Length: 120
Image 1 (tube, rainbow, N blue to C red):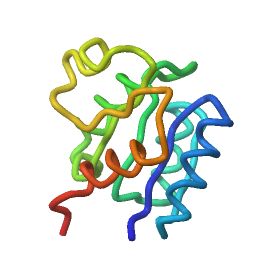
Image 2: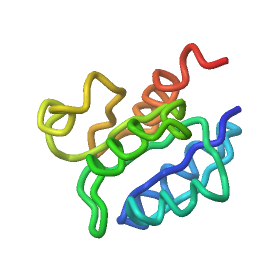
Image 3: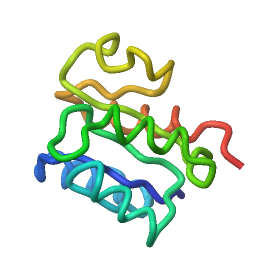
Image 4: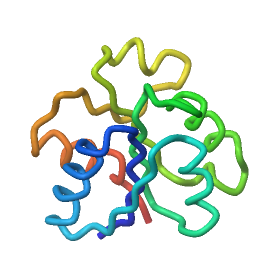
Protein backbone atom coordinates (compact mmCIF):
# COMPACT_ATOMS: atom_id res chain seq x y z
CA UNK A 1 0.00 0.00 0.00
CA UNK A 2 1.01 3.63 -0.36
CA UNK A 3 2.04 6.53 1.82
CA UNK A 4 -0.44 9.38 1.20
CA UNK A 5 -0.19 12.97 2.43
CA UNK A 6 -3.58 14.66 2.88
CA UNK A 7 -3.37 18.46 2.85
CA UNK A 8 -6.58 20.12 4.06
CA UNK A 9 -7.31 22.92 6.53
CA UNK A 10 -10.58 21.26 7.57
CA UNK A 11 -9.63 18.77 10.28
CA UNK A 12 -12.82 16.74 9.90
CA UNK A 13 -12.23 16.13 6.21
CA UNK A 14 -8.56 15.25 6.69
CA UNK A 15 -9.46 12.84 9.50
CA UNK A 16 -12.22 11.22 7.44
CA UNK A 17 -9.93 10.69 4.44
CA UNK A 18 -7.23 9.39 6.79
CA UNK A 19 -9.66 6.85 8.28
CA UNK A 20 -10.85 5.71 4.84
CA UNK A 21 -7.34 5.23 3.51
CA UNK A 22 -5.98 3.60 6.66
CA UNK A 23 -8.87 1.10 6.53
CA UNK A 24 -7.54 0.17 3.08
CA UNK A 25 -4.01 -0.32 4.39
CA UNK A 26 -2.42 2.97 3.35
CA UNK A 27 -0.16 4.98 5.67
CA UNK A 28 -1.57 8.50 5.90
CA UNK A 29 0.16 11.75 6.83
CA UNK A 30 -1.64 15.09 7.20
CA UNK A 31 -0.85 18.78 6.89
CA UNK A 32 -3.07 21.81 7.51
CA UNK A 33 -1.91 23.96 4.56
CA UNK A 34 0.64 24.11 1.76
CA UNK A 35 3.56 25.39 3.80
CA UNK A 36 3.01 22.72 6.43
CA UNK A 37 2.92 20.14 3.64
CA UNK A 38 6.27 21.32 2.27
CA UNK A 39 7.75 21.11 5.77
CA UNK A 40 6.34 17.59 6.07
CA UNK A 41 7.99 16.63 2.78
CA UNK A 42 11.39 17.36 4.31
CA UNK A 43 10.69 14.54 6.81
CA UNK A 44 8.61 12.02 4.85
CA UNK A 45 8.14 11.30 1.17
CA UNK A 46 4.67 10.13 0.20
CA UNK A 47 3.79 8.45 -3.06
CA UNK A 48 0.69 10.63 -3.38
CA UNK A 49 -0.37 14.04 -2.11
CA UNK A 50 -4.10 14.76 -1.99
CA UNK A 51 -4.36 18.58 -1.99
CA UNK A 52 -7.32 20.77 -1.04
CA UNK A 53 -7.69 23.72 -3.40
CA UNK A 54 -8.73 26.44 -0.93
CA UNK A 55 -6.51 26.76 2.15
CA UNK A 56 -4.91 29.58 4.13
CA UNK A 57 -1.17 30.38 4.14
CA UNK A 58 -0.41 28.50 0.88
CA UNK A 59 -3.33 27.36 -1.23
CA UNK A 60 -3.60 24.14 -3.19
CA UNK A 61 -2.69 25.57 -6.59
CA UNK A 62 0.50 27.15 -5.20
CA UNK A 63 1.45 23.89 -3.47
CA UNK A 64 0.73 21.91 -6.63
CA UNK A 65 2.93 24.18 -8.75
CA UNK A 66 5.73 24.21 -6.17
CA UNK A 67 5.88 20.41 -6.08
CA UNK A 68 5.44 19.97 -9.85
CA UNK A 69 8.31 22.39 -10.54
CA UNK A 70 10.74 21.03 -7.96
CA UNK A 71 13.14 18.48 -9.51
CA UNK A 72 13.40 16.66 -6.17
CA UNK A 73 9.62 16.41 -5.67
CA UNK A 74 8.03 16.32 -9.12
CA UNK A 75 7.95 12.51 -9.17
CA UNK A 76 5.34 12.50 -6.37
CA UNK A 77 1.85 11.89 -7.70
CA UNK A 78 -0.66 14.67 -7.05
CA UNK A 79 -4.46 14.85 -6.84
CA UNK A 80 -6.66 17.84 -6.13
CA UNK A 81 -9.89 18.13 -4.17
CA UNK A 82 -12.46 20.88 -3.73
CA UNK A 83 -16.14 21.73 -3.54
CA UNK A 84 -15.57 23.96 -6.57
CA UNK A 85 -16.08 22.53 -10.08
CA UNK A 86 -13.26 20.44 -11.55
CA UNK A 87 -12.73 22.92 -14.40
CA UNK A 88 -12.20 25.81 -11.99
CA UNK A 89 -9.74 23.92 -9.80
CA UNK A 90 -7.68 22.30 -12.54
CA UNK A 91 -7.41 25.36 -14.78
CA UNK A 92 -3.70 25.71 -15.47
CA UNK A 93 -2.80 22.56 -13.51
CA UNK A 94 -3.47 19.97 -16.18
CA UNK A 95 -5.54 16.83 -16.12
CA UNK A 96 -4.92 15.35 -12.68
CA UNK A 97 -7.13 13.16 -10.51
CA UNK A 98 -9.85 15.23 -8.80
CA UNK A 99 -12.01 14.54 -5.74
CA UNK A 100 -15.19 16.64 -5.57
CA UNK A 101 -16.43 17.55 -2.09
CA UNK A 102 -18.69 16.39 -0.58
CA UNK A 103 -17.54 12.89 -1.42
CA UNK A 104 -18.44 9.29 -0.71
CA UNK A 105 -16.14 6.62 0.64
CA UNK A 106 -15.84 4.99 -2.79
CA UNK A 107 -14.99 8.36 -4.41
CA UNK A 108 -11.90 8.71 -2.20
CA UNK A 109 -10.74 5.21 -3.05
CA UNK A 110 -11.33 5.75 -6.79
CA UNK A 111 -9.27 8.97 -6.87
CA UNK A 112 -6.42 7.42 -4.89
CA UNK A 113 -6.43 4.38 -7.17
CA UNK A 114 -6.46 6.60 -10.27
CA UNK A 115 -3.59 8.72 -8.92
CA UNK A 116 -1.48 5.69 -7.99
CA UNK A 117 -2.25 3.72 -11.15
CA UNK A 118 0.91 2.82 -13.00
CA UNK A 119 3.28 3.48 -10.10
CA UNK A 120 6.39 1.38 -9.92
